[in-house]
Image (cartoon, rainbow, N blue to C red; front, side, top):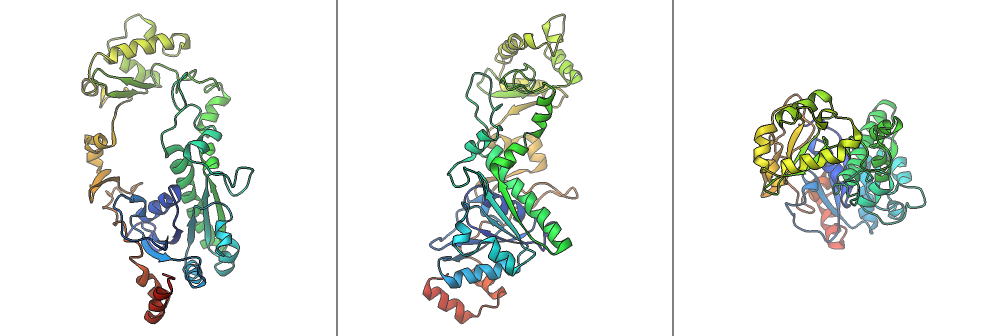
Length: 374
């Protein structure tokens, strides 16, 4: 049993960040019922974002199916939907109807641009939301295209995680006051909010709008370097004591410009010198020399390599489950290593089980199957 045991979530099938939010809550023990669209069949082990959920297939264009969905919401703590603004209302499943029936419901809505604003009804993707919010600006070196890591800054960080926080906060309030709420989780808002640490630095001149001028995107001691074998490493000793350890371990600490860590005019030349140095040996050499010290070092690993790294293996964070590499639940509680997540369900695998919980009779279930409701 997970820490969210007893929490019931109804998720309407969507793409990307909304299903990821449902997976996160299921990983932590919530009972997540996934309403999938009619015409779905089978299960794809690669659909990791469906793991641990219970699946029911409904044709939400039919009144009987809508009533089933509303009955599920009557007993739910929260709802997850990631459709364009207005779609749930047109289905007759909008927050006004749902909250009238269940006053404690937390109605979680995840979109790219938000429920309001001039772009609310426009299409977009992760890179667009991160770009407009400012979160993509420092992604990459000066002179090169800003490229944020796919899905992580927008869809997952700014979207799924903020929806999860909003849902859990809403459930806490509902249990205290009896009042539900509507969560408007916009990826553009979440990715903007994640910038507040950088905005703190920016306010004191630490992160100017000019790319490549700060410790985090221009300094020789914070970045990635390619090695002789084509592999890459990362270093990030921002603090002087960690920086001096790096310089000493690299044999660069004798009366030269490397000793003036924060002399910005020297950064470009020092970056070139470090690039030349790291390019002389393979990644394994630098890993053996620098890993496990306080120089703030890590090799840049592919997902397959990350799974086999001793630290990741010791924490058992990445596993091959049914032939699919995936990360286990996070965060951890009470020092326990997470168990393997429950499998991805077959589409509609739990339809009868879920309907039985709503006191739907076997004859009604059979009739609805004939009518194409299920």
